[in-house]
Length: 84
Image 1: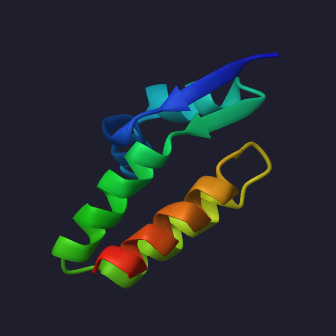
Image 2: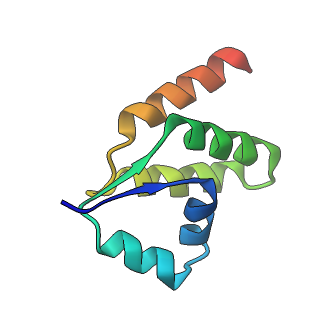
């Protein structure tokens, strides 16, 4: 089984459509993303001007068949709500 762990920079490159990242994701069975990366992304979304759009893109990514991070997303969202 091929797995891949995305960090914040790799996710941003994925969103930008970078072919190397897209190819790497296509060749894996499972994509992981840590709660720390989710926290960084949510923080960046909050500080930016496109929070809603960025959250929707991330939720779409996390909802994909290769994503194993739904529980982390829920935890990160809950923590953000508690600490903000």
